[in-house]
Image 1: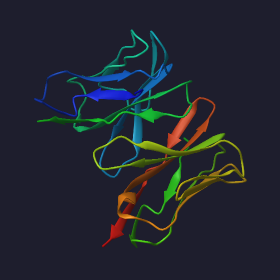
Image 2: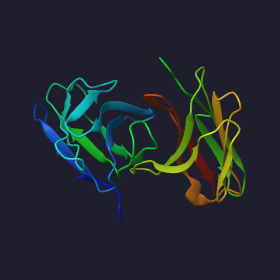
Image 3: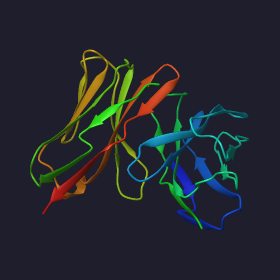
Image 4: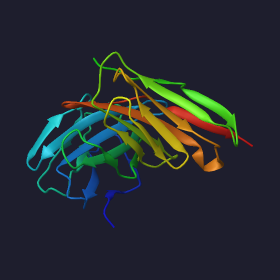
Length: 112
Length: 109
């Protein structure tokens, strides 16, 4: 079955630690995206990548970093510089940039 | 910047009732998408609309791409308990895709 996987489902970290969230897709999609979702809020774009070895900042990139070394993978690192990292993180992909996006199951990150 | 106004923000209905929600914008879009998100899960694409005036159904769900290209509507007929969740619209144009803040659907027992 083709799809997007995110791991782990739940992640707990201490303040001051960097943490990397995994996102893998086997849909052969060119574009991948990371969103942050807070309670009662819509989806806010963190970073996106249209093609391997290329990525652009979204609306709330500060305190986050990404890499796109392989088409299938788009990991997100939440750095200690992110002031309010506790949130639900969603990864998505689309066949072409800005096309229909398909989402993974999400990772809920809690930083204490 | 571009914004989508999605309404209502929340709705409480009885099982079996029909549901209507909409998204509006001051900007035009080339594509409208409707997603449903269950608690603790990622959004799932329900319906994609590509042409102004287009009306598309997916089971009990029907969505329309507004003639002005600035709005879209989603209707759910004969609601059932598993319809509970958050419904998001998204508008796409050129190098942008914008998401609404969602309509949270509650079904009363």
